Image 1 (spheres, rainbow, N blue to C red):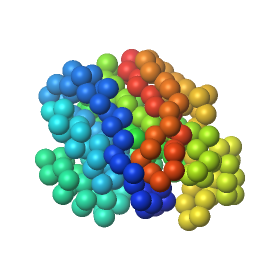
Image 2: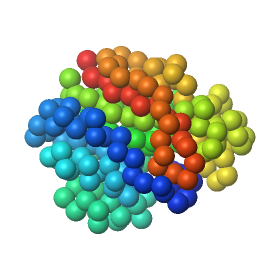
Image 3: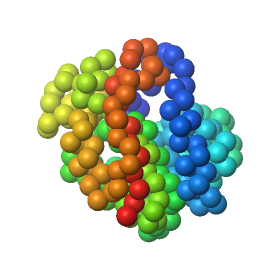
Length: 201
């Protein structure tokens, strides 16, 4: 899975999207394991550690993992592909975080990922996730070669964009407690994302 081309553009700032979830993270982590999918350079990893979480930070890019390890030396970093079965036991995670890391895959593979997340998280555990929105025109929505609905080959990689129905389908079987489309200022241009919090039941 190649690095997202958004990530090589000048960053405006680290958007503080996790601030409102910190109390919930502390409550649900509470000594359990927190899995971060697609940790990148470790911005969210640092915030998770500040909440007292025991973090396993996963990324396919060795370069990003080195950056994450430098930014968040107390995290366990692991090289792995989100699009393949995860190397974790059933119900071994209290929290799973996936911020803009689930959009590289075909729909069939995306649903396999959803199944893997449910396998790895304990009952009552929480998933915090952000997804590319179909309105994210600055970063590839409705551009490039369309391989399947809302899934494009853009530049040198594939990218998926989600509408509300797509996010709800991905989270089918979860208890969705929060779902909102937002605009973030992490990159040079505004980026449209869906943000979700759901509980495994």
